Image (cartoon, rainbow, N blue to C red; front, side, top):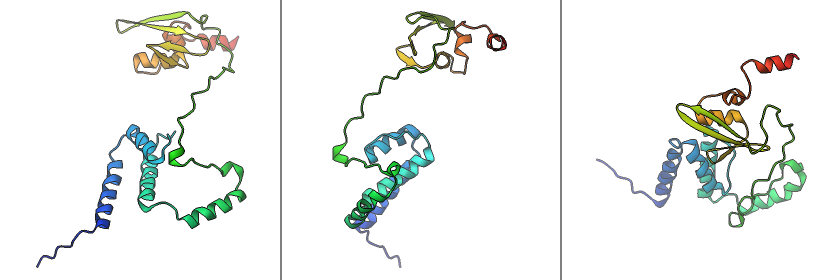
Length: 183
């Protein structure tokens, strides 16, 4: 005799949660970062797939369970004054989230490399039969409408492999840095 068990709404919730958790295991890091933002209402700096999967799973389960009880939250607030200030970080309520502030303009504290041409100059290089132009700025470089911090990053974007940017654009001869250090 085959007895069938009726499914309750609680069983459906468990199955639905299991499906959500299983979906996390096949997501890419980019998809996990987007899901993290949906669940927690803020971006993450992490690119660790294992960490993101577990953190999102915890957040989904917390939301499904209703989060902390009111009494527990009150006790946490009472104890908050006794913890070191570096541990205090109040997260805004989900309805209070504001858009992130615009990135700050950073001033370079490092000296400008003397091998670089003046800001506004254009460096050109033919690679794989195609000409690539890079505009030099005071603290960075523009190539193909994007900003790069170093010439090496530009060279990597062009070639797909690691390069010394000064060598790639002909601003330094091979072995010249060793000669310069010896002087």
